[in-house]
Image (cartoon, rainbow, N blue to C red; front, top):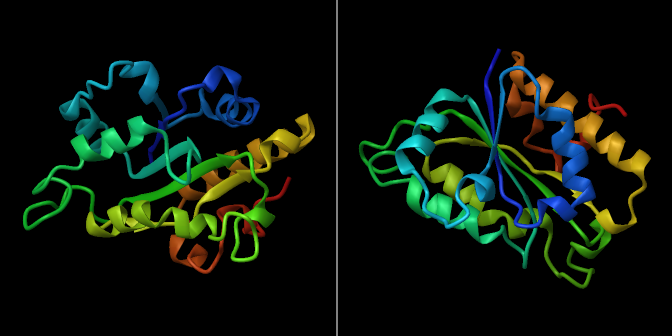
Length: 197
């Protein structure tokens, strides 16, 4: 079974119903490592060697974060800046991460309808996540579409439970012999027909 590393970055996790629902379902799951970056590095002093060891030990990497100002919370940028070193993650000798699977799991206050050319945010979620996609490409990783929980302020407890079910099913699917090339045409991983609620 493939090992999953969830790199979780939320500076106000204790106030997030949506993220609590998603994470509670996965915290004790077999072969899933939940790694809260703000909890481990409250002063942003990232242990690069430890983070690199975690990446080596896992086949599937998840950047799990809220969408803050069309990007991620600051610690995730700090993590990328420090951990993804030249000639380790990329460059002539940077082969360590090649062929690992990576994607974003995000939460947004805005609904799906506001993230499009006609919506007030003008761009799609996928367009806002281009720096993550290109980072994965540079490191030779297999970047998948995001799993997105949107309009979080208006979701019922049942809605959140359904998203948590989908997230768990997605992890189970990716840990098996699932062919991830089948999902590249989807806008969100949530849209996979195999993820039932």
